[in-house]
Every structure is written in C-alpha cells, then in structure tokens.
Image (cartoon, rainbow over all chains, first blue to last red; front, side, top):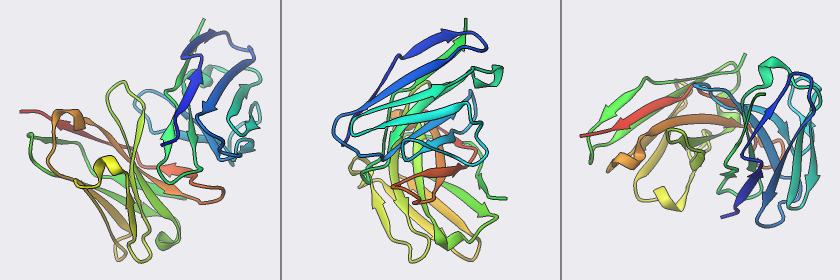
Length: 107
Length: 120
C-alpha cells in the first residue's frame, strides 16, 4: 500500500492567518491526491481533488498544489469555521490510503 | 440533492456480525462506485473496500478480504457492508462514500457514519 504522511500533526493559528499543511506519498501518485476537512462528530468533507481542483461549494481561500510525492494544502486567510482536522488521501491505487491528519486549532 | 443516509449505531459481542446500510438519493444510484471507510476512535481512516452498484462487482482490502461482504439493492438504492467475526479492534465509525471517479478514486459525498461498538 502507498503510505501517506502529513506535517505538522497539529498547529495553532489565529483567524486571518495563512496556513500550510504538507502531505507526502511513499511513491509517486502523479496528481491523484485529495484533501478532506473533518470536524468532530462529522463525516469528512471533500475540499480539493486531483491535487489542485477546488470541489464545488468550497471557499476559494482553500487551495492545493503539488504532484508526484509532495503536496500542499493552503488556507489563505483562516476563518473561525476552518478549525478542524485535515486529511490527505491518495486516489492513485485501489487500496485507498489516508494521511494521519493535521489538527488546526485556535491560538 | 445527493444524500447518503446510514443505519443507526450498533453494539455487538465479539464473534458476531454486523450489517450496515447506506441509502442513496438525489442521483442515479447505479452510476457511481461506493466505498466503505472506517475510523476507529481518535484515529485516522482505513479503507475497507468498494462496490459498483451496476452489476455488484466488489474489491476488498486484503486486511478484510475474509471477513467483509459488500452488497447492493438497486430497487432501494441501498448498499450494505457486513463484517463478520467482530473483535474489539473493529470498534469504529463506519462510513459509506460515493466515488465520482472524476480523477482516480474521489469520494465526494459521505454518509453520516455508523458507530459500531464491539464489547462483551
């Protein structure tokens, strides 16, 4: 299986901050990388697919970049509703795998 | 609008089986794959397998190959995931998710999750 890692595992930020989360795959996955947001007790929400395509209805302050093994999720200006845990997921191979998550909380 | 509604929480004893349902609405059921993913308390996500509602073909994660069965009922637009020989480590929230297949395996809509607790 393709292993996914994320950094940092958690971060503290303030409203209005620019936040960057990185994700690394154990082998090249081209642009087959998705990003999800999850809030406590809720199902994950798709934010970004194909590494950089914004899912319909997702605010434009979210953006993704990268290809191959290294990827980045950026939140341009953090809003109160963005405090959550973020996961990357490779969609390259049938055995889907997810990163361990990055928890974004309030500084 | 697309909705996936899962069945309610379950409590099972070790060795038992559980069957979770996921009813889809708001789109053509047979057009998209479904995946099942679980999340143990405070943990990350684990992919269990997938089913194509048109025809019922399946693909399971090797870890669950001998314990999981995914089926569908096209008359009710419902997919099912049955996990047998339950153990305490199977305690988790189980999610169904629709796959748009827009670029690889992309899960755009998720059910609300079903908590399965395995305890003696």
